[in-house]
Image 1 (cartoon, rainbow, N blue to C red):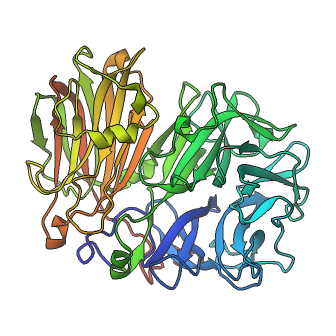
Image 2 (image 1 turned 90 degrees about the vertical axis):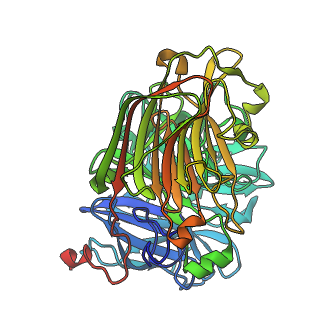
Length: 552
């Protein structure tokens, strides 16, 4: 279905041609192709009948859908093939995945490529000795899932992390194997919490302290100046969090950096908006680590049924560790630039208090906007109530983009129906606050006025951006607008927020507006603004064999 028929359907984000999608699984680069597996319902647009969908790409932008890779065919996975990973074992891709077996237990299984000469990896075989990991002893059989990508230790053992609930506490269990088929649970977990019942979709990977380059999981090539990242998905909040620390291979434990508290409110988030179940992989082609994440719908199931589809993936992001060694930076992969078309620019443009300036001349429902703001002074910043430090979204919920502040709000109004913003608009903006010991840049994505449709969830998301705003008084914002999804990257990718937006005005064919604004008391300068209209990518179009025809 095209955007002309379905204005909510995206143009350059990954989604199947129809039906339900959720967690990304086993992304990889193999023999000239990028592969993305994903949770998929081949029978309809609502959750159920979960199998592994499969698509391939040469550039991470245009995708061809292949047949289902894993389906519910055996007693050990008859109730669903759920989240898992791909690991290269002796150079060959091997799948580990969670399923619900015929006893309604969550178990871990293995699958191998069926045809060694097929680079498309269209067929997989599941050996009869599955499952290879069982919820034994103190493991809750209803909460034992999502095996990570495996890594090979210097002691000759493979390792895999699995999320589990053990007698009411969350643990990332570690399993070890000499041959990747026979697994034993390690005496100690990789990491655990006494305050939460379940961490799912664990992702564990090394990051460099000195380079933006990605690192593979092989410790033999990761000697030197590195740290590790442990990412978990917390069902309690439906958000993804991560910790930076050190991995002790001898003890097989992850130790978060100094200052760690067993409280998710103190942890950095992969995305402060609307994503879940993120998964990364090492891209050996360009020596980088790339992250995907599921972005579910926030309107009604009736809307999903009417559209015939539900769920998309974020646009793939390169990720690396910031120079402070404390936070990740995320940025859309460079291949996105191939879709750029018509461009609009502003340079050294002053926004006076109360200004709202329209960016016109491009299709504003399908665009990439990059803007750099410069502040004259920080002296007018309002004092921050410290109670918001652990709940910044509450602050965003209590203010609006039209409230006059000291410095800010300033930013973007996207998918807007009119110049005054009285009907529909989505605001992504900054405000500067004065904390107890420093000035702080606050980023807010406000959906409260984004849609007049019925049944749409319209939250406000907030976060403090990990930049020193007092250093040069400059802060940047990059926003990808693709019909019903808006991804924003604040402070050079240090704070990310993804939104689902369903404006009513597009249903009648009305175009959307894009505005840059300043509603603070102090003027703000736009050092530079670049906005590109984006072309439509080829994403999982039915009966489209533009890639596979070259491999047959």
